Image (cartoon, rainbow, N blue to C red; front, side, top):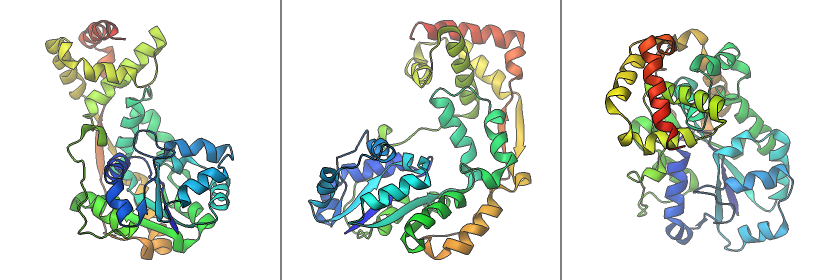
Length: 326
């Protein structure tokens, strides 16, 4: 039996993929693919991570996967955070299966802002510069930006023939990510698969850069003043948006938007080095490769609004309003 291990990584529509698999479990099972409920938290198999790290995959876990006598899909973007010895353990624990890796390759220039945004959404306090500079300064050593590092590690453990790569950027342009994913799984394209595009729980809604900066500053304030950390600040902001003073909030947003710095990503040579390695080593493993024009620059708000007298007053007013919900 084949076991497909979808390792993400983050910011490659993993939630949408997992929700699609979960919503279509029966259809997939009828077509020789088992998307097990065991280890699932939310939509993906995120509860598999600790058993791997703690070396606690047991015989009953293996029996559960083997029972339907179908090919299996396990999916969690958190798998990408595992180390090489963790994958060696997993390979040995699942030695009864033919393991196939699925990796959605998104070029660094298209995801660096998204990664920072996701960190801020979950309570991060670093500015974009603070987050990005250590990665941009040493792109060849950053697993966050250089996809080749993790792919080469996975190749060492599972072998080149076991690696399946989907060009996420090409799929994003063609709006066919789920179709490419199903193709990799060997699922017929004519199957009636329901894709939950309009399900808000299946997608991580992107925020405008000025709102990310505003939430980042709120994270700092609530962490320092009330020791509130994590995603609760962002959730309170989004859930209570209509209850906040709209004039104050809109004026603050406009102030943040008025002063941005441009980051010229091409000067850091982020994608070309990694892409060359991936094509040299894995081009035949990519289901839908397309040469993509890299993003040249991105614009991110500065922190000058924080020292503007009006800005600090408006921010304090927003902080006090939001405090009522936290």
